[in-house]
Image (cartoon, rainbow, N blue to C red; front, side, top):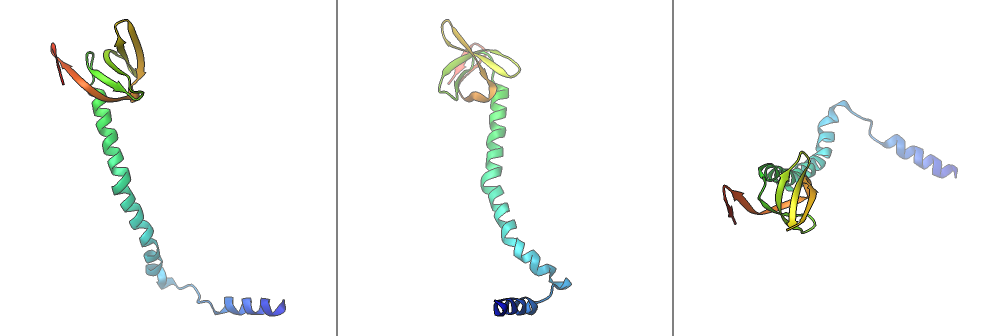
Length: 117
């Protein structure tokens, strides 16, 4: 037991002391982590932000008469626009309220008196 303790103390005594001039080497040890973060930003975070911005623009451009698809796969025409949701007509006598974030895409925009597809 004593021999194991002596050898571990000898090993610790042989390690190089910390030097003040080794800051460049410590920066180089973080370089792979920095490069991974930058790559992850350009491959994952930036495209997601762009997609989210396009979705927000699409939601802002929606108006009554536009045909949309919800996240649940329901097709309908927007009849009213509220602060945080849309009223959608999905059948002749059926209207539902859907949160703005649940509109996934526009099927047809209505401009003036005619629909564009």
